[in-house]
Amino acid sequence: MTMQAPKRQIGFVLLEGFSMIAFSNAIEAFRMANYVSTENLYGFSVAGLSADGHTSASNHISVNHTAQMAELLNCQLIFVCGGFDLSKLKNTGLRTWLQRFAQKGIALGGLCTGAFALADAGLLNDYRASIHWENMLASKETFPQTHFNTSIYTIDRNRYTCSGGTAALDLCINIVRLHHDRKLSDAVAEQFTLSTLRSEDDPQHIPLSSQLNSGYNYVVEALVLMDKNLEEPLPIHELAQLLGISVRQLERWFNSYFNKPPQLYYIEVRLLHAKRLLKQTNKSIIDVALACGFSNPSSFSKAYRSQFSLTPSQTRKQTVAEVGSMPV
Image (cartoon, rainbow, N blue to C red; front, side, top):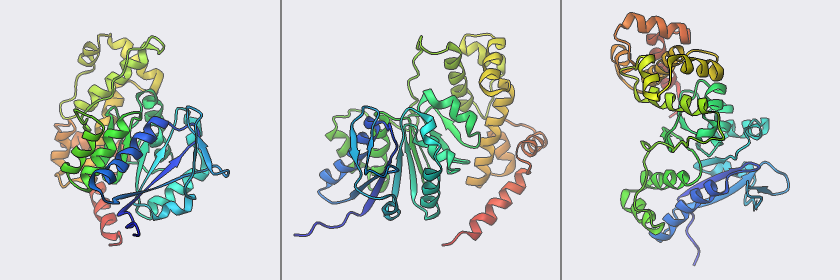
């Protein structure tokens, strides 16, 4: 009896030193969906950039490729599996392939630092994305047009990113739910003896490690508070108070990491959120301004134009024109 072709083909691009736990958690979620449903719902294609047909993980175990990069063009979803070394993610060949996948309309995902590679290819501009907390500040500084957050995973339209580790399992089981239904995703979770399936709202646990500069942890926590308080922005003195530090310390650390004070960074976060709302929702410009903490529409328009060299109404018109010109 001939096995039925899979309904969806999932591709994995393994980068040198990739996180084995993130890769295995992701692929196992889809494999288990096949097992539980007794259907061939998902097929898998594993590729990489090396010419010798295999890629070594961070634990030095080598995984053989099952496909060439060009064969991934037949996939419906492709994950980039990154590791701990960000320098290995800025690669011209990888950038070209990712852009080619995106041009074909393939959904893209990033496991662990895979989101960094997607952002480097310009494929996370104006998207929300998750990345491991250790790489948060470097990613935000390098790619300001991407709204990196501290959630364990993020699903934003056709972009699927997670912080790595076991978060890849939560992400991919939720993708199974989106593709099918909760009954199947719950059955998959039960097979992995998961009592609770985490959601996008669950934050990463950020340890106060003595190995890290304490300022780093406070800055990351400040970013979390900013993201949670966009409609009613916190005064900087209150933000510092919640963190248990002085305003002067907070300003020094923000200037150290971002070359700008927290006040300015906070405004930019709110304006980026406003840009996403203008492009992705039908909210009026006044409602967008209020949702981003601007009570005065005139002040909002002035700040927005200063940041993006466009007015809010021009952004809205530009988005409508882009959508209208997209092929059906």
